[in-house]
Image 1 (cartoon, rainbow, N blue to C red):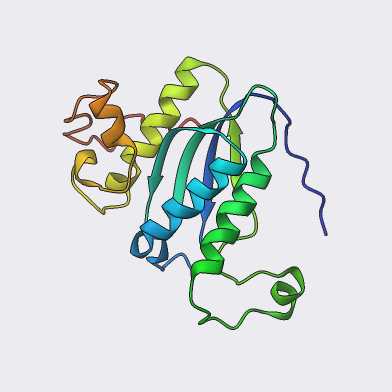
Image 2: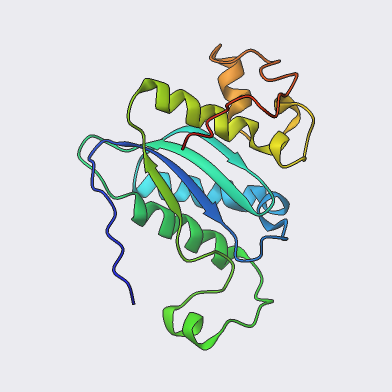
Length: 177
């Protein structure tokens, strides 16, 4: 089995993409309360700040900041995935390798991470999170997607409510990842 070496940056800011195994599923949005509870449980045990998060039916994107003395985002994702999976009714037939690893077959094993380099990079990744439901055709306007921290950022005055209201497919919303 490959040994994935992930960067260790204490107090770092990170962008993540986390996918379900079944990319045609709507499990995440159908069970948003369960995902929120899994995230809350994990944050209580291993604190982190959610700078941005958007949950789509089959995947999610997030920007996190870890505590100054902590670099372990992997344990947080493992716990979020585990709490969520344990709350789901057993309806799948996992493979022998998944059974051996104690996996349910709900999530893809890995996730994609990117260390945020600077404020410009941070802003691009926030924008990428928020525009994603529009890019996937779930809504016409960013403000119409309910499973996004965009609404929190609008209330805080960080984004106008009509941000990206006229979606331009050729505009750059964090694509230079």
